Image 1 (tube, rainbow, N blue to C red):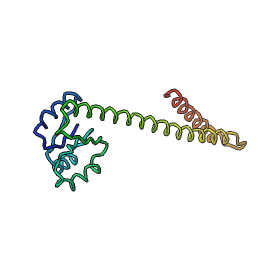
Image 2: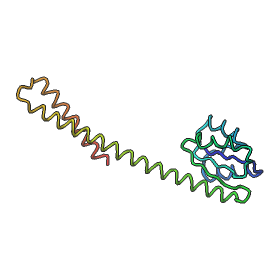
Image 3: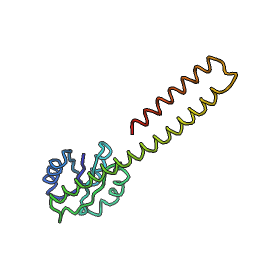
Image 4: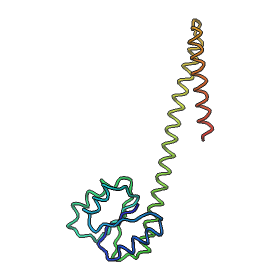
Length: 162
């Protein structure tokens, strides 16, 4: 969803063009108070703010970044920007946001994979050392072998998932 905050008379035209170009629904608000209500009710992918909004709204507008969540904020002067430019800027911002999320997810996956591999290495090493104990009871030995096999299976799955 996209939120368009403006008092421009072209707000409907702009919202329809954004919906058509992005395939996402566009909500509109004529002031920051209405926008803040919408932000509390919905999660948006992008928030387009008209730079021509009155300064009397600035206090409410200061809350916008804190409530925007993962939405990308765009500040555009709708008085001088055509609808096509607004649409182009929104699409570019959404594309950048998707790219950044993809990169962040890949980094998180690498970190998590590394941490799991380190833990598995510790489990395997400790289990194998314990199996070398001379007075190990047979029941404990069977359980330790099971732990080793399971850890090895997880390690192999992680290697094949790359």
